Image 1: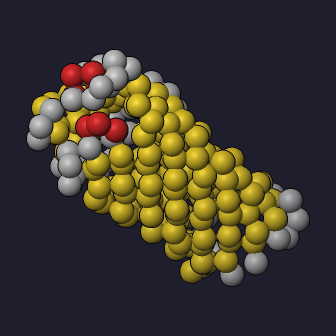
Image 2 (image 1 turned 90 degrees about the vertical axis):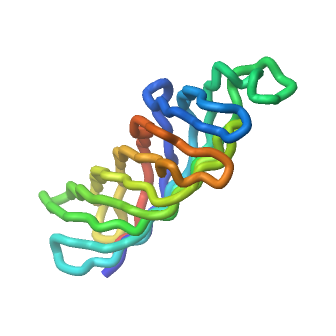
Length: 178
């Protein structure tokens, strides 16, 4: 038995702050200003209470970098478009209450964060989440995911994150269940 889902992702604005360290541009505090994206997940049932699967997350938003103009960039704008991409193998518990199923879980895998002029950071990331599924018949469900995504720390090719508060992700989607 498997579940295949797709959803629209919203990235909470103004909550996530990080310290971006770039070899040429120094140490700079940045904050994520929200954005949108997509999430695709595939799960395989191991038991009726447990599944293993994977998430593919792609998000695009704005990063507020007060020192953007001082980072060697020709613009005085302190906002820059940034991208987050993650491939996260996951494990989910499943608690079925009839037409509603609660799925707490944990995902751990590769994440890539493009911090604009500050550089790219990539490496292992961690994402605890709670997925709620509302079944509409035997083969279809609407899903609501709340995820706290922790960036990879000190793993960049161009820059490092020396600290980061979690990035809050909310997705609304649909899934096929077989």
